[in-house]
Length: 387
Ligand SMILES: Cc1ncc(COP(=O)(O)O)c(C=O)c1O
Image (cartoon, helix red, strand yellow):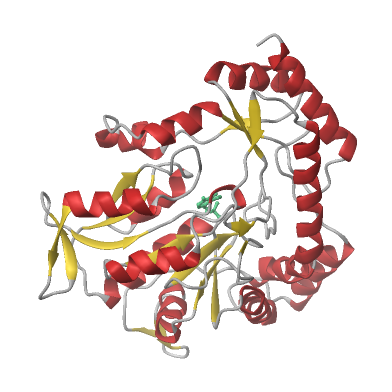
């Protein structure tokens, strides 16, 4: 079986975990946590990094802290693309909000600033006195929008995100779960120009701690509050006094140990990921498909995707790969079509549905062999040769 994305560990990873085990600092405190947060912030180029137990929780915690910042105690809206892993939407709902789905850019996986603009203008009214937007039907406040950096490609150039956020006086929380190691064209890491960006260290990500996540921000007050909320909002370590209803959302030292050693290898891993992308792009030579790419960033090439000319071609390739024990996968069912979000099922998001129907993710583990990339590509080309 060739899997979609496997983790890769070496003796340094094993030694770090052993060191944490033997130190007996296995839980929510310990030196690896501080070290991981510090080196992660340095890697991204931000002031603060707050570790959490997974990416979904990172998203939820950021929304919870934002609600408190703006004193929003009833339901609210957050706008996000429908074409994302359901966790993005679930985090909104878990924190008491309503997830509002918009379409991606035409023929791409990219967040559409134009669709965001249209959605706000047709569904919300600006309350100039309060300086926020109110849903015309439900009167919910629009709290934020959440671009998602899909498959390791940038959701949109950071100056464009910043521009629309200023134009509408609206906070950005970036779902960067899949985009560690993705850079803007000016060389800055994605996610450092919004209020916060959230990364995932799930087993299938470019850096893994088994499970885990990180929130990065340049806002020192927000960072302090995130840490406080994630640590049961404890003010007094001796007498256990808590001034807010916080959460136990922290990453444990045992896993942060893995994060520290994994982070050291990230740069070289990114080089290999780019090689894999280049191999696929060399081998997948056909006028009936394109290897997905965008011009607006230097991707981490996390998960290579092929966009076929039609749903039928995609299905043929998928069937052939599965028959040959190769794990390929269509994109997630878009959120607006999920049974879990059934009140949205009648939405028509044409580009989202079109891309979902024609795209296939291909095995992209750093340790995949060049011959395997060739074999997978040949099988795809063969499967669609009779069209
Ligand atoms: C786009 C996206 N958002 C959120 C998440 C949630 O992260 P986690 O699995 O660490 O909770 C993931 C991945 O797992 C993801 O791919």
